[in-house]
Amino acid sequence: MSFDFTGRVAVVTGAGGGLGRCHALALAARGCAVVVNDLGGDVRGEGGSDSAAQAVVREITDNGGKALAHGGNVTSFEDMQDMVDKTVAEFGRLDILVNNAGILRDKTFAKMDLADFRTVVDVHLMGSVNATKAALPVMQEQEYGRIIVTTSSSGMYGNFGQSNYGAAKAALSGFMNSMKLETAKFGIRVNALLPVAATRMTESIIPEEMLSLLKPELVSPAVVFMASDEAPTGEIISAGAGTFSRSVVVETNSVYLGEEPTPEMIRENWDKISDISTAKPLGSGSEHTQKVLAAVFEGRKK
Image (tube, rainbow, N blue to C red; front, side, top):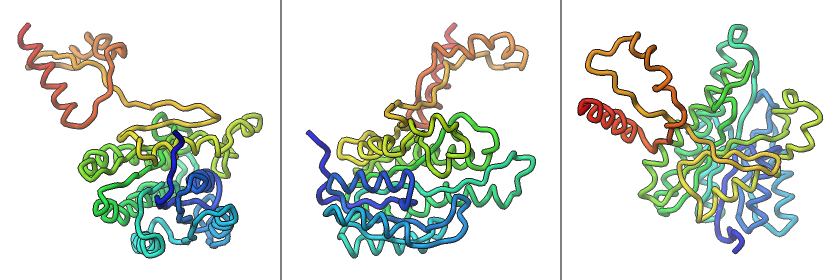
């Protein structure tokens, strides 16, 4: 059975172009009313215009869908609250929030101005926090919601010249991990998208011959899945060029080294400590603590 979003309402930030536009169109094509948020700035987050958001709204409405443009800045909680208020006033509810807005200010950390570091973190991390904070009370009242944040391979694995971007994207995975626990009782599911796509943000770092393979619309099926009634929670889904995978943080078995461990003991046992064949994912911080204590109790028996 096909996913049907008739009656559902989504907000997509940064939806005036690139991935956000594709996400908005994909949701609208399945019957979802969509609020297209976009400040209309450049890739560095400078400038502003509502023309991009309005153009996406026209694409949706020309195809018989429902859409509303909003030009709020994700770094302003007041703008995000206004966006949510207008969404509810127009459509009566808010079911799906896709935190997609982002900018780039690439430079090696040694040469980077700290203002550029803060600005990138503010847009990616705090932008998602602001939009989520505004949307959450509505979703809690409904006892239903789908929240999607956008992480990155830079945050998961690192990229040269992107310490600011990578830090913000890694922080979003941590934000998602706590939010999945706090919102579960309200019927809200929270996941992260790890996209690989050719957009204006990536065209300068992806080789020309690969750009044609990395169409942004090939990422959006993952967003539709995470926005659906059947969505998982607490997952990072990588999507790009028609491929999909689950990205997982794993930890090896805890190795108990006694009540008086030394750095030398870590060195001597490093092969066992770092044995990736024993690695598994953990669902929460408390599960991690339980894992450590279980290793202690088991080690003391020997």
